[in-house]
Image (cartoon, rainbow, N blue to C red; front, side):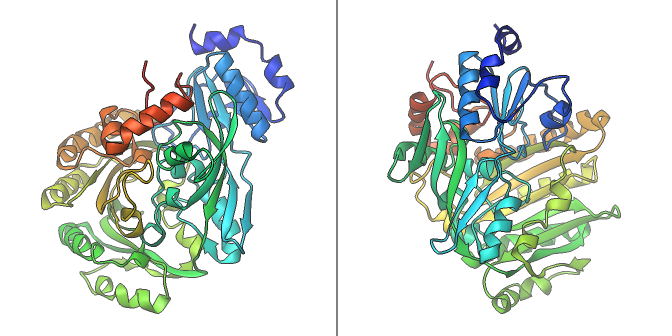
Length: 459
């Protein structure tokens, strides 16, 4: 029996009797809004959206899905490009109403519910001058980013989001609610730190916090795209010399709002402003920039500097990504050729340099195994009109077909594409894959949580 038939045959009365949140079915007011996600190219129609009000609702929804053999999607921020937060015919367990954040400034910890975004999180922690590594776009969900590892502006100094995770409350496929930490269900805690949503549904996270801000240095310097090759070569050398406090850096090929093709370097510095200014002086002196937007700003503002390009829900998107040990001239040349052929001015090609604390964790210490200095290469196709989908997707696929052989075949799993081959998951987890497979067999042997970069249990 397919998912839709299973739901039609089952009565919803048992779930309604044990559910305090909102149950949204096709045809009801708000259904189309509730099923939409960040990537407008994803157009799926779930049979039921269960918008949870708390852990009891989550347990009820998980039990209902399991008992009725429904396909399960879990929605936190709904920001994943592959569209894992929704599905056809099955049930969406929607945490978007569960976004409370509680900060303990003395202990420097924060407890956050699974539906919160990094904008929700940062707003509360910055009241106390604290933060932890979050995403690079503020409406990214805390849960999805952390479970996949969590690259962000603080990663050079404080590691990934998952490196700052202290505990998690998890509803497993059999409907139990477990606490996972270094001392409780430690095997599950290991798997949650980079293993994606494979092992259960996390309703709450506890993070370690660090003093950050209130003012930090950040922004970008923009150059004409005619200087792109020189900019990428400069960036490649300069980024590898950065100290931990410089955090995440990037270089991107993009189109300015006035239609001008451009190349930009992005930098962040988390220490004293005067130190950051001295460090970035060579950047300001390089080339002939069109604009220099690196400046002191509140931490919460820096967390939004990419929002204009990437935060809007409903834009059509197609994303291909991979990690390379070297940003070779050959890769750079291919990226420049791709930018010249790009059919949409909203698209971009971005490279981020991973360094510092996140690369000094042993690969086997957490499920996240990409623990070395890497270049995270991203082809981000974006367009407004669905009629343009075919040519924009073709652009991304064709360019990636030329770039991918020059990478290591690995990908940051939060950037895993829906049409990526499963072999990329195994390659990305490397020596941790077999342990993750055993963990999946223990906590989700029927693969109830399958909409993710999936680790399939044996059989």
